[in-house]
Length: 233
Image (cartoon, rainbow, N blue to C red):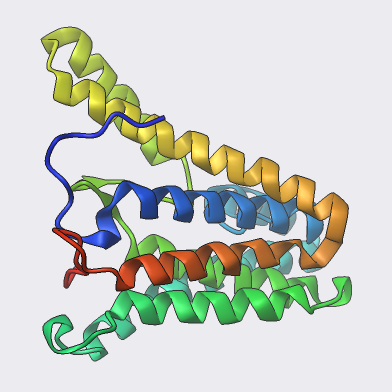
């Protein structure tokens, strides 16, 4: 799926394999919140803001709240991730990195969501959006390229921009970069498809695939083989 450059990322948190896992999880979370929890987006806050505005205008206060709180929770997730980053201390003195803390909180939030009934979808969606906000803030690069694993619009823009640059300059690096962005988008969509299939099989418990994926990411980030080490940013 991906064409990779010869230069490996110096951080496991920026590796392609971790990006794939996180994109799969991001797609699952968005599909889950939309299909299983009342048509609210976990990641696509642009969509939530659009629907928030429409429902406010139409004075549908309950629906407006259903879209407003996930947006707020997503923002809080970003704040939490940054707080963890600045309070965790030097990565060189620790086996665990601040991003491990982010993943642990994500896992706990999503496990809690799996036990929540449909009657408290507002809380379930808010916790899922908070987890997404933490992830998008903590994991922002793959091989030095700014890439989001919880949404697609920025990746689509950057990938298409790189493809246009390749057509113009014929530099192989631009083509690799385009494939990287498009590959992450494909992984996100695959995650959504998997999430949809699991919802049909297990309903609210379908979200548990995300903690499993995040646990794999956690373990990968413990690896310090070769050039793959967990960096400070």
